[in-house]
Image (cartoon, rainbow over all chains, first blue to last red; front, side):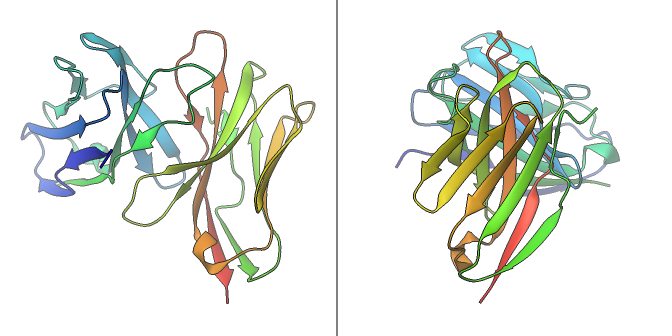
Length: 116
Length: 113
């Protein structure tokens, strides 16, 4: 089954304790992206990757890191989490990124992160 | 600076009636627009899209209208069904090398049986 898999689904942590949220897709997609969803703010892009070893900042990259060493994986790293990073996070992937295919953006089920 | 706005956080509609969800944008460089639907505990899924060269696009019960001069788009669902209860996000894309979607804040639609 074609899917984007995020882990964990729920995570509670404390300020300053490094964590990684994993994202994996089995569709051989070139494009991957991370979003956070917050009440009243909608979905905001954190980082995106056009292909292996190619990453770029989205709208809210501060406090986050990503890597794209393999095509299928795009982990989100919080080196020193803070309470303002408490949010619902979504990973997404797409075959490519252009006008003709951008509706083929597949999202994972989300990771609810709470930083105490 | 919210470039894509959905001014109604929630909307309740009787089953069988029309649901109209609205979205406004400020960036005149946006020329492709999409609607995503999100159920609880799931990621958003693509619903329907429209290019700026059109003013209307239909797909079954879903129709999206675009008014470029007003920088406004709307999603019509007719007839509304209980399974349409979800959060709806509009999103915009610029075709000028900016490879990212800008999402709105979302509208929670509740269909009342």
